[in-house]
Structure formats: C-alpha cells, structure tokens
Image 1 (cartoon, rainbow, N blue to C red):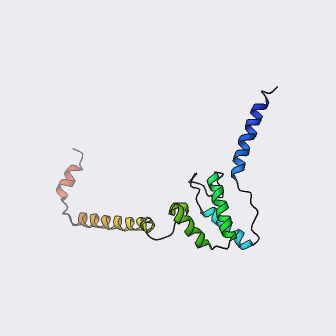
Image 2 (image 1 turned 30 degrees about the vertical axis):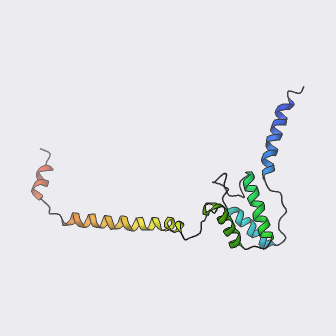
Image 3 (image 1 turned 90 degrees about the vertical axis):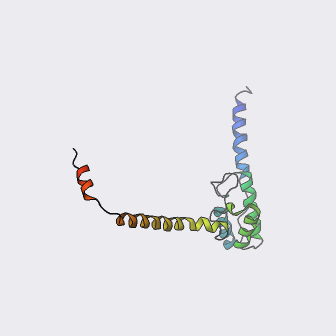
Length: 146
C-alpha cells in the first residue's frame, strides 16, 4: 500500500520545491514604488537562466535578487541607484538594456559603423568597375555560343 504513495509524494515534493523559489512578499504600500519594483523585475536578467527576467524566473538566485530589489525600493532608493548597485555587483550583463557608454558603446555603434564601412567599400568597387575599359569585341564573340 505504501508503493502507490511514493510517486505522489515525489510529485508534491518537486512541485513545492519550485514554488518555494518564488518570492512571497507583500506588495509595497506606495503604488509608485510597487510600479518601480515591477518594472525593475522585468529589466533585470536572471543570472542563472540568462534568457529570463528575475520576475519570470523561479531560480533561487532570482528570488534573492527580487527580494533585494524589493528591499531597496522599500528603503526609498531610486531606480538609478538600484541599477548602479546591480551592475557594480554583477556587471552590465545583469540589465537587459545595458547602459550606453564604455565597452557597451562599441556594441551600440558597431552596426551603424559596419553599414557605413560596407557602403564605402561598395561605392569604391562600383567606381573602379565603371572606370575599367570595356572591350566589346571579346564580349560579342564569347556570347555567341559557338
């Protein structure tokens, strides 16, 4: 009779372990602070999952980050102060929209610079090709199909 209970116990155990990772703190009293908290949980990357925000992740580290962000918002820290704290601790990777400047500036500017460079190279190739002499005698004999 104990054997059928074992799978049920295991299913309940594993489902509770994932639910335990989610935070269960109360909403902030100030609606502006609650909005800031919710916005930050959607802008901060889970360092374990890396393709999820801390608001979407059930990883224990994400729960710790949500708790820490909640405490900083409740303490009255600004969005910039919280983001600075997170990037100083975890690097720019923690933000889905990294700050502009430093090494990240190259990533922001690279597509435009590559497009300009490619356009310049294309312009030079077309300009040189148009300057080449055209030999009509060779073109007409090669294209006859003999």
